[in-house]
Length: 367
Image 1 (cartoon, rainbow, N blue to C red):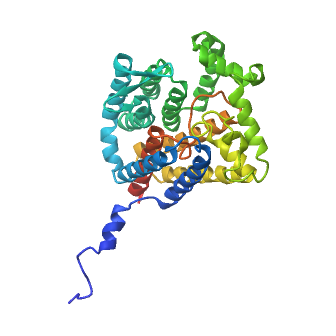
Image 2 (image 1 turned 45 degrees about the horizontal axis):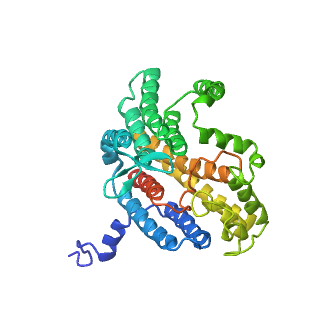
Image 3 (image 1 turned 135 degrees about the vertical axis):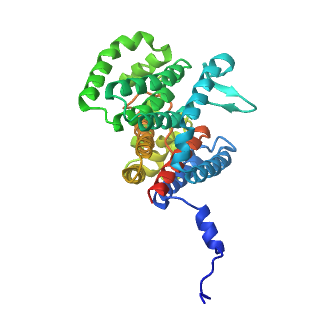
């Protein structure tokens, strides 16, 4: 009679279907967000309301992540060309009707300010993953040349805003797709050699502030109270944390205002001062776990599009963390890259949430 079988879905079954997430990935992101909030509470003590705004940003980013996790990769694949086209058009619109802030024209005002270059961090790998999936039968070198042109257009537009940090991230996002699509090691070596040769030739093309950042990296002590102040004070904060740190809310460099941008790009300095080497190791392990989980999801992808997109997004997370920590530690020039799922911010956090949601969608497909 089958009296024990009910065809009506139970309430918790409906809830389970709505909470389609990759829980190992979500746990890594949750831990990073929690650590970031704890650090922000200390770093933003002089910025009333910033902690509450970050809570709002996190809720929006989590909502975007959940929504993206419930969109099938096949649907994302169909949307890829349109997303790329809209992103490029918005970048062109910035030059016509953009809003200038701090000497750079990077925003559009449509009732609120948006930064179109942030869209390209996801639209770029989406487009190239679609391209390599769609034109898999095209001859090898024409395919890579066409992909390079698709990548160069938005990167060039972002560079002219000027926004070196975002341009490098978009370039990295697209390059990872091209690399994963089968770029040979010989070609990779040739590109590296060409890049080294081009470095001195590109020096005159840089803006004054960009050249100054490179010079500051080489010798921050040349202007200790000016251009080198931020890097010097950041290094003091990281070093003074010692093994166990000074303790939460006890960091002197951050609370006395010696670290500019201490709640955004340089929040790692505050964290390192208060939690020390032990805290740094824990944070690096969290990022390592995030990247490993992303690579696991990528390895199980069932289509070329999903594999290329998942790999690129995972490596974007790595690039964010690697460049930010290197920048704050004085290894790289200051290029304005936030620490992923950690720094205060809205647009970047939502972009990262979208990327995490796409990874979860790929994982769902592979099941």
